[in-house]
Amino acid sequence: MLDLIAKHESSSLAAIAEAASVADLDRVESDALGKSGSLIVLKRDLGSIPVEERKTAGRALNEARQHVEVSLAQRREELAAVERVARLQAERLDLTEVPTTVSVGHAHIVTQAWEELEDVFVGMGYHVAEGPDVETDWHNFDALNIPPGHPARDGFDTIYVNHGEPGSTLLRTHTSPVQIRTMLTQEPPIYIVAPGRVFRRDTADATHMPVFHQLEGLVIDKGISLADLAGTIQAFTERYFGSGFNSRLRPNYFPFTEPSAEFDVQSPDGSWLELGGCGMVHPNVLRAGGVDPEEWSGFAFGFGIDRLALLKFGVDDLRDMYSNDIRFLRQF
Ligand code: PHE
Image (tube, rainbow, N blue to C red; front, top):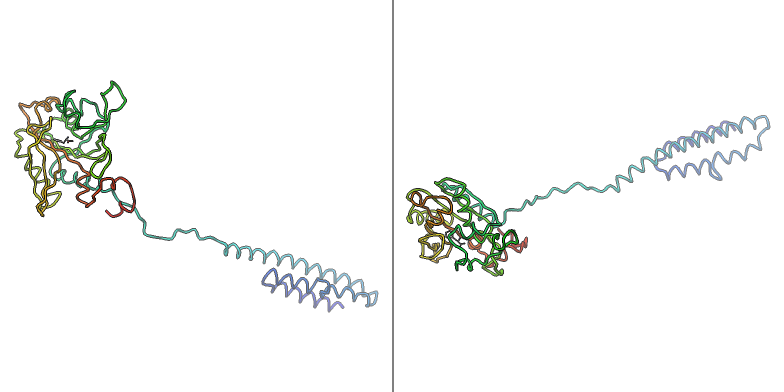
């Protein structure tokens, strides 16, 4: 009897050690300790052995059951831990970012044109100047030889700002007030370009926007003449558009320049494009900027950056540039 108990115990313990899963272990448990398990059936047989052996055999059987139970519990814990790890591995979500080409975007076409224009003029020895978007009526008009009541004021479709005296503060209608601000803060000689945002009470259409961009140029030096202006416009045209391009000046009127001109650019196919205004700085404007017209003279020019970008990139509606449709913007 004792031999039988020892045999069943050791075979149960071996089976426990070999169990590869909790399910295996359940089977081993039922084989050993279940209703007709090897160690349970033996209990019934105790009754049929001599009384003096029964006690020892009973104790041995109890101990064997305890060993098997302890070993089962231990193995169950081990296997449960292994299975838990396996389950976690299987359910694990891979959150590692899949390496793709990173899209960093690029500058807007107006910004590209703006920066390219700055580069061209910096390359010609100019400095970049700037002024505020919200201007005084004086800097935007009076100082530029456009006194109150001057008909040129109507042409600018000014947006006034509710600040200070009524009509004293506005959103600048052109970049020309930067001429005044530069003259008031810098001694001549002056060679500056001032790119920036300008505002007019305009309804958006294919060629107009209420907010657009201009590039202003101002040169003040000794003995500056109209020939210098024409030469500068031509040099700029060739550098920005290319060597096959030409420029011309056509008489025009601006209150802040005298004489004044419109300047056009001709592409190699012969067609002319009206680009902007220019002229010799009016003596009243020099005086407003604190510059002596007897000692210094100069020229100024100004043109729209947006229209230039429109032409350069072959866009036919200005509004497309500002609707921020990524499919449009990605093309450039
Ligand atoms: N400020 C003018 C405009 O907005 C352009 C210009 C600038 C003309 C400088 C002459 C000289 O139309």
